[in-house]
Every structure is written in C-alpha cells, then in structure tokens.
Image 1 (spheres, rainbow, N blue to C red):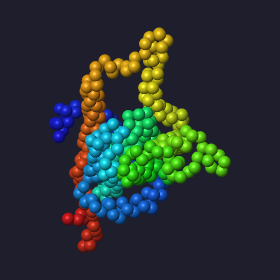
Image 2 (image 1 turned 60 degrees about the vertical axis):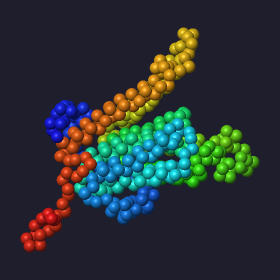
Image 3 (image 1 turned 180 degrees about the vertical axis):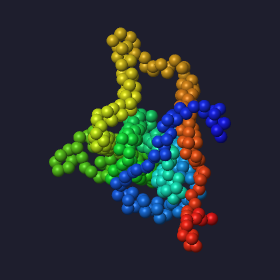
Image 4 (image 1 turned 30 degrees about the vertical axis):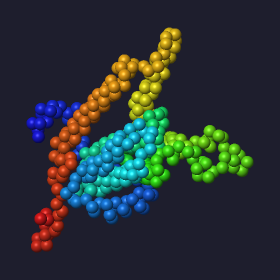
Length: 379
C-alpha cells in the first residue's frame, strides 16, 4: 500500500504533513435543537434502525450506502425527466421520497454506529459532510424536476440558496467548533418536507400539480375583509411560494450563523470582522459570473458593436459539439474532485492506521476477571 501511494500519490496535496498531528486532537461537537429530531426521529433511530446494522459494518459504509439511494433517484431522474420539466410516472416520485428518507436515516445513524464500534474520528466527519455536499446539488435537481422548474433561473436560484446554506453552516462550524442545528433545520425538517413534496407529487399524478395558484388551491379568496390581494401575488403558484419561503429561511439562517461566529470570535478576544470575510469567496464566485455576463454586453454597447445572441459557446458549432464539450468539462471536474477525495482519504487512513469502508481494528469490549479483579478482553 505504501508503494502504491509512493508511485501514484507522491505528495500530499490537500492535507499537509505538518497538520496531521491535529487529527488526533479531533473531537466532534454538535447541538440539535429540532423537536422533531428529539421526540420522533432519534428514538426511532436508537430503538429500531441502529439495531439493523451489525457491529462489523463500518460507519462510513453506512453513509455511502445511504447516498446510493440518492444516486439511484438521480439516475431515475435522468431517464424519465432529463429536462426537469416533464411529468414522470407516479412511482418515480414515490421512489424519490423513499430514497431521500432512507438517505436521511442512514446519514443520521452513522454517528451512532461510530460510537458503538469506537470508530469515531475526523475521517468520519469529513466523509459524512462530503456526501452531504454531493447530495445537496443532486437533490436540488431532483426537487426542480418534482416542480417542473426546467432549466430556468428558478433552478439556478434554488441551487444557489442550497449551496449557500451548506457553505454558511460549514463556515459557522469552523469558527464555533460546533455544528448547531436550529429548531427548524435543513437536515431534519427540510428533508422531511421534501419527502412529503415528492410523495404528494406522486399522489397528485405529476409535477404539474404545483403549477396552479397556491392561494386559490387551498381555498383562500382574493378578497378578505374588504382587502384585495394583488393579482400577481394571488396567482403565484406553489413553486413560487416555496422560493419566497426558502429566501426567508436562507436569510434567517445566514444571519443566525453570522451571529454565532461573531459571538465565538469575541469570546476568544478575536476581531469578528475578519471571520465575516470567510463568506467572501462564495459571493465573489457567483457575483463575478453575473458581473462578467453583464459587463461584457455593456462594453459592446459602449463600442456600438453588435451584441451576439449566443456568445462564445457558438464557436463550438452545433449542439453536438457543445454537448461533447460539456461532457469533457464534467469529466475534468470529476477527475479533480476524485483526486481530492482519494488524497484526503488515503492520507488520513495512513496516518491514523484505519480503513475507510471497513473496520481495521474492531472494538473488543473488556470485562473484569472475577478471579483476580483484572480487566481482560472478551473472546
């Protein structure tokens, strides 16, 4: 194994040698204020679900298995609704609901399995968060298909909001050293809402159901107590109301995370404004994309030059070449991300003397020897 690493992975790119000792000081900390989690889900996980997994099963394998349900959902999406704007058979939506619920369940019990098997460590958290990051993007596309959003600005806006929420939560955890989940949060209530949306979409026969005006559909009249709801607001469909609700939740979560970071920095005597700079790269990346598209046309307008209708991708020719180019870029992205995953996992596993998807050093409980009062391992 060391020779394999020496030839294929000659240098640690993402985890530096001098930072490795900090891995042994790792200690996971989280706070979940969700009432649904406390009174419903956690008892279900503890008393039912966790007993289905043998002690020989590695926690990361549980995480990966749960993610495979989402991958199966995504493959179903690509087969039945690749354009995100077509109705699918009802069973497809039901399978999305079941797959997402199973993903949530497996993702929730991997930590319990780690504590049962004494396998808790930094690799488990990285593996869990890495899978969550992948699921975030895939689930946005599945949700867009369940709403018939198509390849529109609504899909892009939903992706932006979801990624920002994940980024801010990770930024919060980095500074506070604790993963804090509110009374209503994405990993619990957010996923359960999506499960309900998928199931209801299947029951109603397709995503077209969500395109009707929500207020009229639930029986709210346009005139209430002599007041008339504006036509544009009254005719907003379910999807548009969801985006309004999502915007409010996004703003509230971002503000709350910023407050958590400020308090944590001030408690240590550090300046809080430097921590807030950590949000800059995310907004800069998205902002520069919009700025480039806007300014490039502005330059052409000032020069009295004709504004192209398609832009530089048209240089690739017709749609066949553009699709081929996008697949090439997808392959490059997968390659870069794959090198990151392999380097991090192999580096941490080598340093901590563990395996990723199997248990290298099984935990053996100890019991007291009644004859001499000493501890001995159970056989």
